[in-house]
Image (cartoon, rainbow, N blue to C red; front, side, top):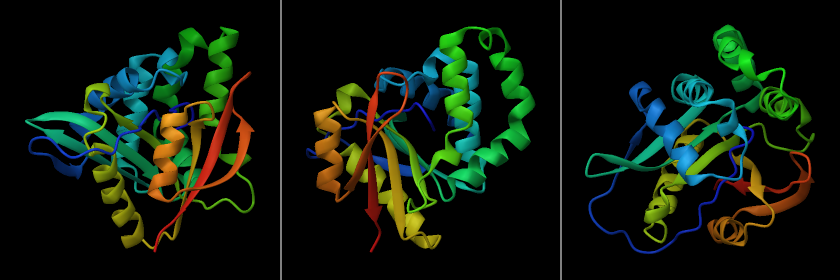
Length: 214
């Protein structure tokens, strides 16, 4: 999901009972709230909670996407979402939900800052480099108070296993703010390989990683 820049950076021991499960459609509003709470750098939040909820709903029910949540005592404390093929995921979104998205975004389309975010969010996939894997992690968020709890590692393990089950051998993650040292260190510890640093929004740089599934 273009604009969802991960701030995950935790790796400590789990505290309390934690369960990992596939996300349900009813989770979409809560995942949109969690993204807004945990990821302040990305601009997708500026497009409104309605659009963010719609995008999360598509992450949950698209045949080209995978979405897992971490739950403790009935509360969602983290989630991760990815696409097995980013191009197909976004094309499916435009086909199935493009009209609803346009209605939700209509009040913002004439504002230049929001227009840049809208275009970036909906036309991100054609910019992929030829050597990039088609699969991509699109959003990865953990509640701030749950950092250093192991939640990030747990949900990453779940989505990696599902990618592997679907025949995916490599995952791209291209929206990690280059200056976010904590998040970048976290991905390196997970085994992600830095392949390049590239511009994203105006005056912003992101690190692009690839993870090989073995």
